Length: 401
Image (cartoon, rainbow, N blue to C red; front, side, top):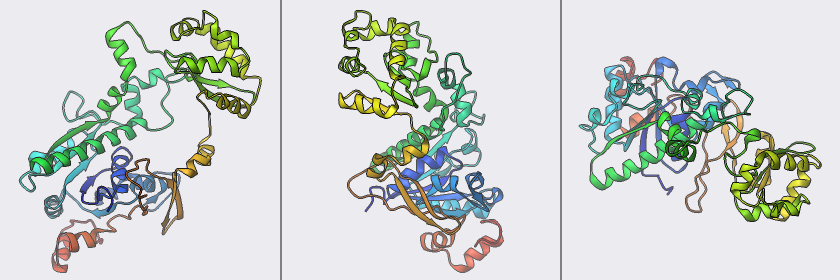
C-alpha cells in the first residue's frame, strides 16, 4: 500500500496553489476527490492556454494527476446533501478559496463537525481567514509583491521582478498539505477534527527567513543584488562566461581557497582583503570584478569541469529544456508519462516526495465528473433512482449523471 492509501480528501480546489499541494498527496496514495463546480465548468485550470482544448489542458494535467473528479453544485440543496454524505466518509475537506468564502459556503469545522467529528478542514487562502485582508483575493504574483519578494529580485538598477515560477503558490500548497496530514494524524489520535488556516501571505512572509530576522533585529535593509548574488556571502552568484552563465558558491572558507586555485589566482586566498566572509563582503566591489574577468575568458563547460575537479559548488544556468534533459533528471525518474485521450502520451515532471522504495504510479488527470458515477454508487451507495433524482434537481450540473 502507498503511504497515504487510507486517506480520503474532498478537494474544493482550483488553479495552482491548492492542486499543487494535493497532487503530492495523491502521488503518495491519498484518494483526492475533486469537487468541481458545474456552473464554472469545473476547475478553472482546465481552460489555461496555450495547450488547451475543450475542458482539457496540459496546465490542468500538471496539477491533477492521480485524482478523481465529481461535478457537484454545492449551492443547490441536493448538491449540498451529496457533499455532506461525502464528508461523513472522508478524512478532510481541502480548499483554496478567498479567505471569507469557506465560512460563507459552510465548509469549516464548526459547519461540518456534526457530520463527522474527526473531519479536518484545511483552507488555503490568499490572506488567511482572519485579519483586515481576509476577504481580498490573493494570487501568487500579487503576494510576491506584497511580501517584499519582488523588491528583492532583479538587478539593482532594474525594476522589481517576480520569480520565474509561482513559488508562493507552490510553497503554500506544500505547507497546506503538511498541515492537512498533521491535522488528520491528530484527529485520528484524539478523535476530534479541526480547522487548518493556511495562506499565501503567511507562507510568503515566513519565507523571508534570515532577511526578516536581520531587518527585525538590526539595521539591515534587504536590497536587490548584482547578478543574483547572495546578500552576505561572497562569492555566491551567477557569473558570465565566454558563452553563457554559471553559478559559483563559496558558503565555506575551504571553497574560497579552492576557487582561487581553480582560476589561477591562489594569492587571493591570503589577501587580507578577501581572507574571510566579512572581509570579502566589505571588499566585494573589488573582488567581484576580478572574478567576472576571470570567468569571462573560458566557456561554461570548461569552467564547470575545472571547478568540479576541485569540489567547488557550481552549476550551469540551464534553460528549462536543458534542465529536463540533464542526466540527473533521468537518473531520479523526474519525467514520467501518462496516457491521455486528447493529448496522447503526456510527459510531465514527477513528485519529488519519496517515501520508501516503491515509486508511485502516475495516472492522467480526470475529466470533469469522470468518477462521479462510481463515487455515488460504490462509495455512497446511491441507487440509480436516487442518482437520477439528484441529477434532475441539478446537483451535478446538466447531463453528467
